[in-house]
Structure formats: structure tokens, C-alpha cells
Length: 338
Image 1 (cartoon, rainbow, N blue to C red):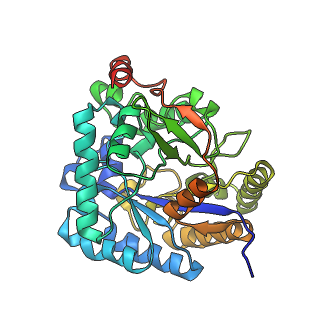
Image 2 (cartoon, rainbow, N blue to C red):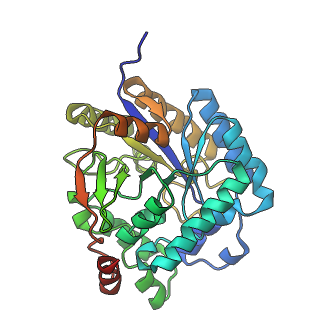
């Protein structure tokens, strides 16, 4: 029988322990502490139980570590896709020069391909960081899609919470001033579209889906936080999001992070992160329930499968690739000249 369910893509940003510590301003991140050995075993078993194949957005710095190659090859052996999540995982890519961006993307791509044997065709900026110049680099390198935008009004609230809990110098606060975007990001489309670039070329954008019309996030980190109040409330919120997606014809792109499956018992250095009071086994239970509910309504696929299906139907709408409103003035001027 033909599967009549609409598609939904699932992806996981493989942010390692050191990258959380670096963004948070914690001492000791330079030693690059890692939870790869715990994370991949847990995650691949959970995905195999569900029979799912997803996209893992890998940080190049981690892919360049020979000790990580076995885990990354296991991702490919299990039938999953790898994407590019930058080399240094700095959520301020909009501040990079064109030369820095070309190096950042190229170095990550080379490290990921060397570790896995698979060349990435999709990119997601850390902290939803992006710029028109970044998109030009992706097109230059033959990428099929970008997945760096989060269309929500809540970015400033997430940034305020982050600044409240982080240990940052004034210079670091300035560097991270655009983290998680601006309230104006809520006006961006939830459905996929094509960026119209200054060079005249285009690039498919698949946003991390927020609830249509409402524009509040429903990726797993938010659902897990809600589950601490009530699992029934979590499921009701998820089903509301699914209903809104179905009513508006939105094929969601659902986002995961490592701390959606790892508990504070497995990554004690990251206790500051919301939801880390949940044990790892409990998170796996909730992860499994959420993905099974999504699978009742959508055919869950990796992101390149979703991207190619979108492009094969008809050309998505064009949208000018203007610099983010929250980008520093100098970066906006540089992007406009590129």
C-alpha cells in the first residue's frame, strides 16, 4: 500500500559537552570534554527501536578527533545521514567574514567526510546563526538545503534566560548579543522556501518548525521541559502542534539535541541546562513516546530526503536573503556588499 502520510524530517544537532560549556562561558571547555561514548550508544539504540533514519548535524571539531570515528561511522552504518554543524560551533556566524565562513564550512565538511565517508549536503548554524554570506558559501559548495532558521517571537526570552544563567564577560555578551535571534524572526515562514541570494542564486531553507500561526517552538527540548509539569500537558501541546501543521499543510522539521536523551546522571557538568533534572532513561521514554505520536501522522525521514521531495514537487516561494535584524551593523553592511 502507498503511504499517504505527509513527510516530516527529524534532525539532531550533535552539540558536544564542550560546546555547551563554551557557549555558557564555563571554564574547562578548552579540554573538549565529550559524552560521545554515552550519547551515540543511547541514541542509536533508541532510533533503531523506532525504525527511524534521521539527520545528525555534526560539529567538525568533534569529527576531527580520531577517537570519535567509530561512533560517527556507526551513524552511517545504521542508515542515518550526517549534516554540517560548523567546525567550532560558535553561534555568532553572522559576525564572520566571507573568508572565515568559507574556512569554517570547508574544514567541517572535510572532517565529517573523512570520519564518516559521507559528504554533507545540508547545514545548520549553531544557535540558529546565519547570514546571506553564509548561504552563498553553501551554494558555492553544492549544498542542497540550509536549516538554520527558527521562526519564533521567543528568541529574546531564550537569550535573556541564557544570559541570566551563563558566566560571561562583557566582551562575550557582546559576541553573543544576537544568540537565538530577535522577535522579528516570528514573522518568518514556517513552511520551506528558497532564499533569493545577492548573487542571483537560490538555496532551499527548511526552518525548524514552530507551531503555525502561534509560532511557539515544539521541538523536544521544549516538550521535555513541559513534561516536568505534566506529561499529559506535554502530549496535549504536541497534538495541538500536529493539528496546526495538518490544518496548514505544514510538513514539520522536528529538532532534537543530545540533552534530549541524556540526563543529568550522564552529563553532570551540564546540570545548568533546563530539564537536566530528568534521568536519562526517563528522557528516552519520553523521546520514544513523542516520536511515535509524530509517526502516527507523518512519515518520518531524514532531512535530505525531505529536501529532495520538496524540490521535486514545485519550486518553493522565494524570499530575499536579508541579514538578520539582530546582526551587528557592520555585519549587515558586509553582507549587503557581498
